[in-house]
Image 1: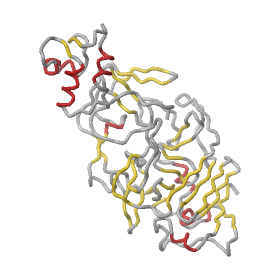
Image 2 (image 1 turned 90 degrees about the vertical axis):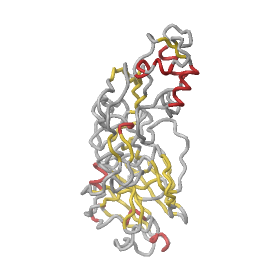
Image 3 (image 1 turned 45 degrees about the vertical axis):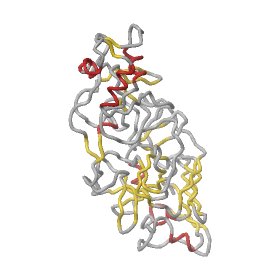
Length: 380
């Protein structure tokens, strides 16, 4: 037997929980409170994973135990995948997979708010591996633009394997896109494959037919930015950000309500039950949650998708980047990119220099919220 899943019977109430997603979909395997061992290949549907279970895989070392309390689904896991992975370390990812010591608690009765709350780590797969679609990787331009790099792109090698996953410096293996092997392992023969739980308590699925489409579209037009560089602790690469919005960066996409089947958080209500869909198209995995949820302030990771150009630094940071003679202001010879084209407009007093105050005034007039700076934290 490759690995076993033990389904533990619990109080009758537990059978009715889990977003009501168990309705009319089969019954639990249980018998008078005893614990049974089964091969997951024998399961006829995914209702088992809405109850308590213990997933162990001797080959890969996976140990994930889920128990139910009155209000919560509690997962204790060493976060080792129960499937094959790519080779780590590799040229794009210098880290090695190692066991973790993680405990997660998901609400048994999730509350839908309809208010999108950004989530760096939206959920956890049934095997204990976290979903973390964004990255901490940024391309910075001397002209001020900052572009957050998507994990699934062809410009920068982030060392993802065939599960669209790689490893953080902590040794934590995590999924940035469709978890190929998870889908195969937990496929019960229906179109919707139950792959995990979001942190707000709602379940996460993958549609094998791909019939549920996200509501994100690539932005029209071209990006701006000159003399752009991507850096990590091991290398520095000159990157050209010019050209159309091709999905390399998070800001290449914008949400257009009702343009697809799914909402802003890649969620949908089916037969009265709300759920999230993992998709082959952006955003791949939800970047926000629609249930009652609050995430601790992140120390790194991705950003919530939004339209427009890449992030721009504030006026002080912009002057610091371009002020080559360090006189605290910018001459026309010092500025680059779009700012050089609008120099005379920003130079409101027409003295041939742009000051911090003039930059801030120009940004406010254009509706730009000063922001920027490289995100802190390890590589994702």
